[in-house]
Image: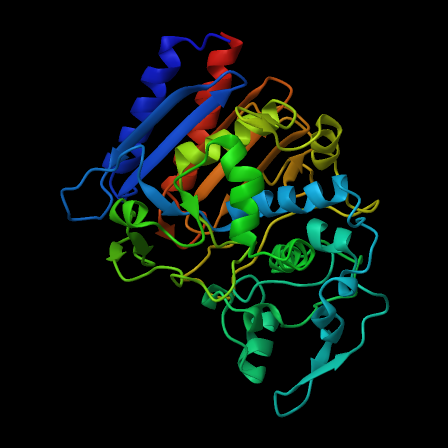
Length: 397
């Protein structure tokens, strides 16, 4: 595929506008790939607001929930090997999950009431976010429960941080939360290794991914982008000491990786190529096809989110007019998006305003990276949508 030079010019302009406009992002990196290779890579702005060091395409970011698809891949490799099925009860591999109960209300003194779930959580429930888990920043009840029980934040990168509560019975609804961290524990239990070691051996090395890991190398640390906070008045403040625990007590399959955008693009390209990477096959073609299909029970949809911690996330939804479902482990737009992404494409995002999409129909995908809280930032998210829109406009010629 030959992408017109006009796209490169437009993409560069979008990145510049994103960082130069009043209230713009401090710095962004964006890349796009087809099945053959990366055809656009750009960076604009700085790694730290107020500091001269420019953002570069090899800058390292906390990629948060864009970690999830990699953990899903590690799990599906086990399915391919016949080590488990998606219908298996999760407690068969992580017994501790059987202790998690359903929130059943609150006592007058603020203590939570809980009950046993009506059925066991399956591996599929975890991959599809139908188990009942949430995140403390997307649920007032989860936050209140954690506070009442003294459960640490999920960003503590500890097992205790995911041993929280179910907001509903398994299979009842789509609720986005710590499910994929449990999936990572299942992978560890079956492989007998830390999740990061499993990923390195079975995903990173076959794809030639180097600058990625739950613990940053010294080289990665030297290129780390500073996290920034956007206040309610729009002002940005650098948070130079904000990092996920290094090394983490637990490799968090739901959010824990650090990486460059270029390394993630290699993963996207593998999925565009039906599971094949430059150094061998990561997944079977039929597995990739399965992972890209909606897995939710009839009547369930993947939608938006509220915020219970406004400093971490705004309320929102991606393309609210477009019906969306959930695959293994991506959101699927069931109709074409206003940006031009065709129905059946895959996408997801990370808390610090990182966004990607995978369009297997046209054989293209992209990743937009920044380090800003709260989520769905007014500047960075808008830049991502403009970037994707420009690409599809160029494809239409």
